[in-house]
Amino acid sequence: MNTAELVVGGLCGLVIVCMFIWIGVALYMAYTKMDVMLGCLKNSSSVMSMASLRHGGPWGKLLLVGGVSGFITFPGFYLRRGSINAEDVNNFPAPLRRKLVALQWTVIGLFAALALLVAVGKSGVLK
Image 1 (cartoon, rainbow, N blue to C red):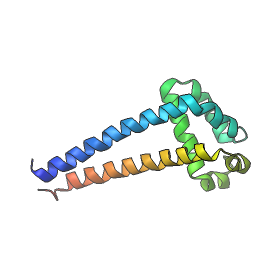
Image 2 (cartoon, rainbow, N blue to C red):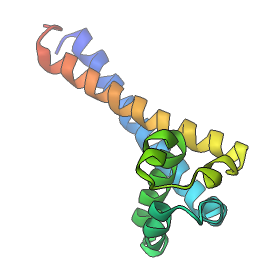
Image 3 (cartoon, helix red, strand yellow):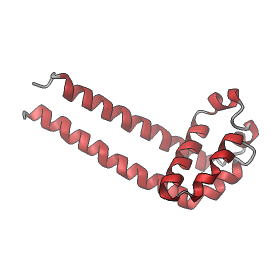
Image 4 (cartoon, helix red, strand yellow):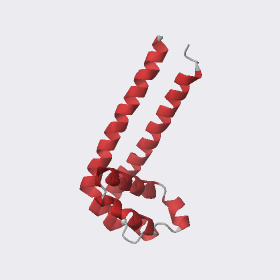
């Protein structure tokens, strides 16, 4: 392995470590803010259909936080389909909204970075 391949491999490892940190942050939010999130979105049919996941252990809570952050980050998509209530989204607490939006964009960025690094590593450009 040459130096460039080692750097790309190290960056992939760093992204994976960041993904585990992201999971920890999402689980922390799930265990501390879940009641607030579900209380603010009680009129949204998609959120209430996913609400049973809160009793599904850590994996269910992670899925629920991911779903709620998707609803809050991209409300236009779900409002057009009638999955969420516009009033619920507008009344969602701003500090929690910022955290969920940051959480969603962070995971999108981490997956994109990992895909890019793997594509560069597999392409043979570094040899």
